[in-house]
Length: 421
Ligand SMILES: *Cc1c(COP(=O)(O)O)cnc(C)c1O
Image (tube, rainbow, N blue to C red):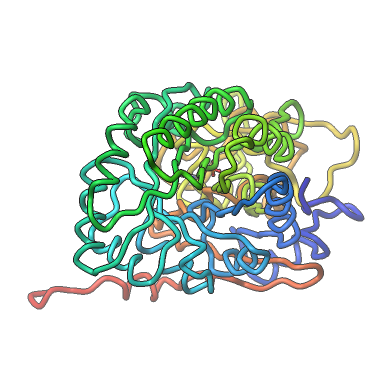
């Protein structure tokens, strides 16, 4: 459920007509709904109410300061994957004790910054990284709380580019090797083992892969405890999928996911951490774009939009489907025509949808890409010197620009010329 619905023939973001925002801010524009963000966060929080837990929003999904502040105020922790994200989380007022640091290539600088600023835990992804954290912590005279990310070798049955839990992926250490790595962690100075971490992929639309992975995590917990390690936290990563189409997809709900976690891991008495990104932000954001031209091609018509692959790369990168709907509500039962929906960038990959059935649209009409809140704005680039598009946050009947569209002058002035030019 989200808060982008038709009302009086118009698409609304909560209580604000989308066309009003487009007129005020211009297009293309990302629009987020506060109520949807909070609703999704609370669904997870409540799903884990059976025990101690912390929901750490995976901020790589959408990391605008206003989004972070909204979630942090509701009690969310943050999952960060870079020094930049760590700085963003602190700037949004999230205390270090609520920030977990994931990612396969933490640099010594990033490790130092997090140790100095406070960190709940590092999720270690490899032995060399574990030794680096030990060295940096020892040099600072502090102790780094750590988990080791284990790779349970389960098939997440999701798109190959976002599956992370198979043995051939670069993530974590093989679960079979975990006892050896934990033994080294316990022996190294400057580290304190606090738990186990696992994250098997993104956009999972079934629960079975989670169940398989968590069964292995439960066994490992017992084995590591028997070896004398204190395992008090289980970080289960993110990955729960969202419906990208209204029609036929029904991924499991957070409440069902919470029950699965309780069933597989509840008896261990650990604090549960989860790191959802997509499910919190995905359906809390839309991308609104204007039709520039309707072009009649051979055997097909093109809708040429003012949004392009640089603004939303998911269709080009992951073959992702986004529902695209007119901002003016179509008459019920109106005629639909197939369109190829494309952007203006000089790449064939700049295609959002092929032969998509849409009500007849004219130049100047507005469309909204649904489910664009996660891995949308954060993956945007200025390819073709197209300015990063603005972001707007809606709350009830108010809206605010939370990231301005830069001017061409801003963009050009970011370059600097060498002396000889
Ligand atoms: C990407 C990522 C997440 C978030 O995944 P979603 O599918 O967006 O929920 C969580 N944890 C880690 C380690 C990640 O890399």
